[in-house]
Image (tube, rainbow, N blue to C red; front, top):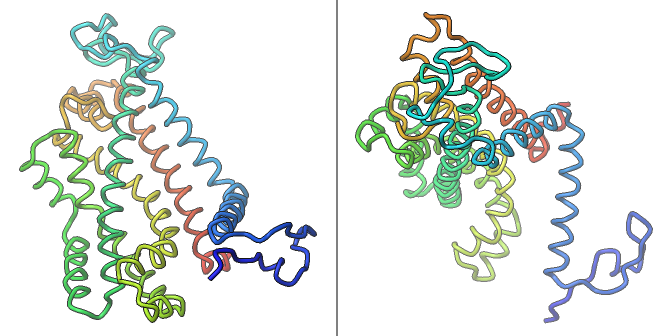
Length: 322
């Protein structure tokens, strides 16, 4: 069988939608790459047309750039309590735009350094949660109605029902307050919703004719899941991953405020925790606690706006409502 497949317009000799005539036959790989490029261009166009999504993307790009450049923007001595030279608990001024903490460190410097850890935890924990949730959802949906689906469905329901904060506190207390353990705790407690959504989408995809055709041709379950089901479910996984980043950042903040975060890593949550323990609000040191809270709110809202826009793009039913 030939490894080439003609473009739909080439087979009929007609011009495409832009009036161009195909010059040659396209291989299957080239045709797939072309369709993916067209799909990306179309989706990006819809994303750009969403003003909220572009605002959210701009905020995320800003904080991401700050996080990457934080080692160049802030020196190690600037956040070292022993080397701090500023006046303790000083309000915002020309020298310290966001004031100082009880050690005399610039709150702005702490905010810049904290962005690196907070975003790192958010993205890394999201990757772990999505990998677990997508795997469970794919397997459960593909084997829907079997004992495998029953076991995985029960496990997913258990993680959805139990209060995540209680489970996270127990796990963090047992594993210890390290950055890796914080990421692990958030990933383990945040995958269930992704699994539920991916399972529902997989149940729909597995009934389509091309899945039956692949199964009739002798394709293995692994081949069908990875080559046919996963590509069709991936847009939903990606949209859910973006929304999970906000949950992961808020979870890290919660654990840090409760004293279960890494005491050696400066994050926005830890800045709030230190300010709270020092009685910043009671003493009127509002500049110490409010800026990291605003940063968390901005990133969370930005991620949510981007996530909802992607969900609308990948879900035709949501597009029809607008």
